[in-house]
Amino acid sequence: MWPSLKGEHWDSVLDRLAADDFTIIDSFLPQDVLDRIEATFDAVEAEDRLHAAKIGHASEEQRISEIRSDYVHWLDRERDLDLEPFFAGIDDLRLAVGRAMYISLLGYEFHLAKYPPGAFYKAHLDQFDQRDNRQLSLVIYLNTHWQPGDGGELKIHGDRPTIVEPLYNRAVLFRSDLVLHEVLIAHKSRRSLTGWLLKRPSSVAVLGL
Image 1: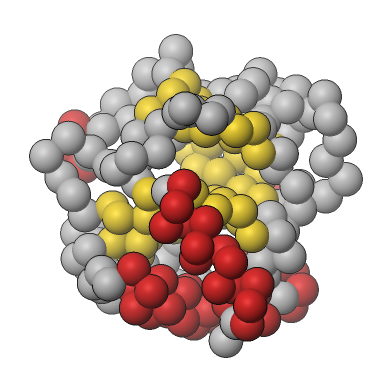
Image 2: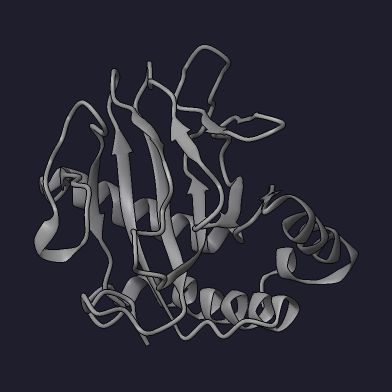
């Protein structure tokens, strides 16, 4: 199990998730796992395998650039064998959060996401209307040397709006059905690994168990 998922710090992470519906975890991934993810991201980008992100579910998906303008690449555990240490850690996370929140989390799905300069994602919920499979959203930032003014922050709406800076190896875990959020305009290229912990195995054959 990753160090970030153990001890008193992890307990406080879960307490904030329960109280505020979101929580921030710095130094989330071990460096060797980060290195594998970054190498995969570099290869995907070099091979032009990032595609314009769409909104909606399955056959209803469409690209609406006025709402979101990022680029994504879906991961697959059976294909992306170099990322097995990441997938194994997510198994631990899924079980740990499920036990703490008394919910059943039986699957997950993840993609790499790139926001080029000028890209954004307007305010939205991650859980689709009348589809409750996405229970928790997880964003892991991969931006080395991020500085104020670089943009791409996560804005969490609500009674106490929160701006989350996309710092390297920072993770944000939040309720998919309750937390209205947006990605502010990126002024420099912004990278993340983004996914969802699911009530049921994924129906789109990416990372579902």
